[in-house]
Length: 521
Image (tube, rainbow, N blue to C red):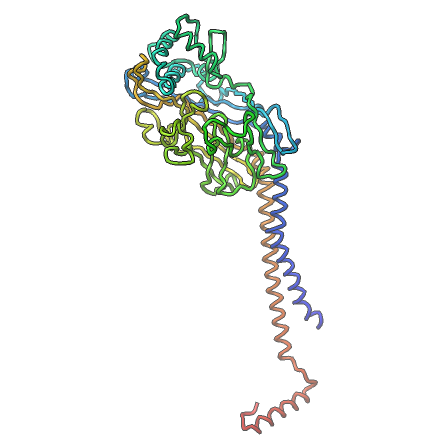
């Protein structure tokens, strides 16, 4: 009898303890353990797996280049609308040395690492299909149009002298250059500066001393290309970033570039400060409103990617982010990217003159998400989000980008300049030269690791905590039911000994009832 009476209490105590454990383990203990484990894994400590991975990636990244061929250059020379034909992609890969971090120096005191980035490009003939790099294309000549646009903006008094220098050096009939793709991108276009006239010598002297990415073949022969000077070399400007050992949310955060605590290009804190990582790693436990921020030295700014929606990527719960170049003409926080306070570019574009020293403008490919006015002066572009947008599939718990596509288009402005003979009749247009796509998608090996080490663990613990909680609630219910039955049983159980005692009691009750003239019990 004692065992029956104690059973509900025992069940209730055990179930209550189970409920408390399920709640504490599911919402306090396990998250704390998981947070500690992930924080320890993502920290860029010496010998760590993540550290080794971002210093030298164990898998390849894709790098595609799409060129724009102007099919009617002589008509454009006379004022017609440029007609563009996209040629590509020319497919490159980065193996082992893709943005390899070299000359790595650790500082344990402030929890930082300093390094130089190295880039090496490998042409992939198989993925490029029939394209070889020997295709001839026509683009605006960067070293004719670029200096002319720069002189018009900054030193208009020099235009007449520049006009003579262009005629002396190039002997050109138009402002357009026709050359092989591989020469424009990597091998180099020759500029022969063995001239003797004053204007030509002066122009060559400026190129020799002031143009940093110009290759000096000889003292009077230069070579330029868009990617050649960066291929197989490391950036001499070091980057300092947080290792995240002391605080995981700081992992990868850029602190300095080229020895400076800010970019010192745009002249205002909002645009000059480093925000985010270098793009090879992101901190864990990011909230939706945090966004993904990464600093790119190629465009001298940090670029934010904003949360769009929750998705499932190859069986893994993830977030989908997209990025744009913003709208400096309307967003007060982006006004410092304007060429001057009174000359802001339209939505979806950014002038890199202050960054690169050349009047190049970046947009998304085919002017996607840019002001519609950019499309009118050119023909042959077809913008769409699938092919031309920037996006990231991101696992927020571990801070892992599972698939990402960064796309940027480089354009050069055409303008009518009366004092430059080759530019007197040009139309006003922003002309695309090429666009690039940097992309990565984790292979099945890394996806399965992420599933087994994180997703499945979380799923198992989630199932376990709810099973414990539900069983505990059921147990409490059973205990209550048993206690109810026990209490009900005591109410109807006779408390007097034998039938004779019960009869005597009933007689007493009956007599009292009759004495009060009430119906007998």
